[in-house]
Every structure is written in structure tokens, then in C-alpha cells.
Length: 236
Length: 193
Image (spheres, one colour):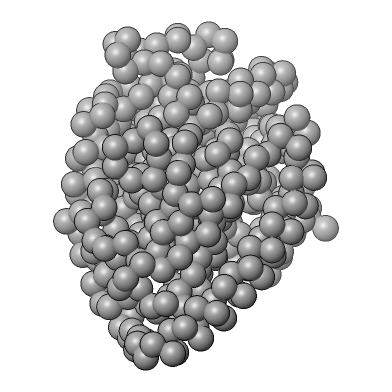
């Protein structure tokens, strides 16, 4: 139960109106009271909504260039090292491919089941599936499946058996769209130590006619335009 | 009980997580989504395009450097960014030593544009927030005027709660209660829409 006095303090805290002593005292109350924390969050959301009542003005395009230039010069956090060795023996590749096909089918079936449930809840939602297969120099057992919702311009990618890249490199996802000359970046994707990732993504530009998705190996942090080799690529 | 995140909030969280991993394309997307409303807020509070742009730059550099520490339990990405912006703007207001410069007008009295036509259009368009902005304005308009005045003064001006009480010529306890009731009603009514 939260008292009215606590609610008053919570409202002032959410707006940053408490003085230093009051703020410190309220923070210790917050640490001990989950209900109060939830209230503060609600009040913060309400306060932030007030920003939407400001008259709409867009910043100049040059500001984005200035900021992007600024972050590009900042130090980047190094990626964890460690790249798994690649299987190269022909029979091993063949066996891996057989396993890969089976797992891919299972993966796809699982994603289709998940999306079918969502689709049932929202009949307007359209989802396309893309199966990404390895291209040299990717390991033969690497695989990925993309569930793409063009109406929402967002999707989910599930990757497995893709070893972490060497330090200073990142994998980057691209949407190959019929209306765009160059692939559209959908962001950097990072796999865990088992070579697995499941990530929600959103391309940086509108992609209404996606023919394929691809994953390339790029400089750490990603690049605005594809530079590195394609490791995985696939269509519907 | 905390509210379940919307799809947009989950997408925002994913983008911030990617920024935390130094993903510049995610940063670019977050800039495109948030820069309009954040710049609009900075303009309303500062009233000066050059200062508003500097403030926005500070905010996005903070988003870049602090993304890894963003806590979704404490606020949505939008609220986090708005409150960062408000904080940076208040720093600037204090630095230039002019407090309370902005006249907080009620929403319907707000002039539609303060800059040239090339830069003024719907900032909310860029983040698909036109509807959300209209809903907030509508809910705000329907709050009791004393609550609306109190929360607008509290949010848009660099005033302490004591100064707000003095400005409104009301006891401090009354002002605190108005701010609390106004914010709670605002959130509750927006949640119920």
C-alpha cells in the first residue's frame, strides 16, 4: 500500500523536482518498495507523454550527419575473441548438411507455428519466411531462418551454428529489396558462444519488396553499405 | 504491476540493446524515430534552434554511450529519451541563467509552427506518433485546469515545486497533490484509450 505522501513524492521524483536530500531519501524508499517503483514508472511514462504536446518541429538533416560523424569517431568496445574451427573434411560437410537440412525444417516448422498463433490473433498480419543457406566462406552447418512482416517492417531472425567472428568484425543482416539498388541494413547480429542468435530486427529504410535476406561479415559495429563477403543468403 | 510492453516498446528495447553493442544502423533508426519529438521538446523549452540542436546532439551522444546501461524496468525507451532531453535542456537553461523563459500555453493555444516551412511538419510523422500526440493533447485538455497547469509548469519549466506553488499562489501540499493527480489521470486515461 502506498500512502498519498509517497504518491506525491513519486510524482515529484518522476519529474526530477525533488531537492537532493528528498531525492536521496526517496531513492532508498524505492529500493525497498516494488509497488512504489511501478508507480514511479507509470508516472514517468505519463510525464514523458507530455513531450508529444510540443509543437512539431523537425531538426535539420545536417544534425544527424553531425551526430553520426561524432559517434563514428568514438572508441568501440572490442568483440570477444574466439572463432570456432571450420569443418572442412568432405564427408563431414556432407553429414553436416544432412543434419542442417533436418534442423532447418524443424526450425522453420517451429517459427511457422509461433507465427501461426500470432496470425490467428491478427488476421491482417502477413508474414514471409526466408531460409538462409551458407555461402563460402561460411561453415556448411551454419543456418538461419527469417520471419518477415512487411506491413510492420520488422522481423525475427534465428541463426544457429554460426561461429563468432574474429575480433574487429561483426555479422550484419541485409534486406535485398527490389526497389533499392543496394541491400538495406537491418543491423548487426551477434551470436552467442554456441553460435546461436534470435533477434528482432528492423531495416533502416523501408523495404516493401524484399527478395532475399543475407548476412555478411563486416567491420565491427556494422557499415552503412555492404562491404564484406556474404556468409548466408536466402529467399522465400 | 508494471504494464506489459507494447510491440513498439519491445522493438525500441531491441534497438537500444543493439546500440549498446555499438550498432550504428540501430542508432540511425532510433535517431529517425525519436529526433522529431525530442527536438520539438527542446525547441519548446529553449525557444532557440541552435541551442535545441546542441541539446539534441548531447542527448543522442548520451544514448550512444549509455545504451548498455538502459534499464527497461525503469522506463520505456521513449520516456528515457524524453527525460534525458528534458534534463539536458534544463542544464542549458540554468547555464544561460534564464529561468522560466517559456510561457506554457495550453495545447489549443499553442502556435502551430515556429520555424520555417521546410523544417516544420509533423515531427510525429517520423515516429508514427501523430495519433499518440492527438490522444495526449485530448486527454490533457480534459484534465481539470488546475491539474493541467501544475503538470505543464512542472514538466516544461525549470521550476522547483516551491516555485510552482508560488507561481500558482497555492499551498505546496495542494500543488504536490495536483501534480500527482494530474500525472496519474493522464497515464490512466491514455492506458484506457
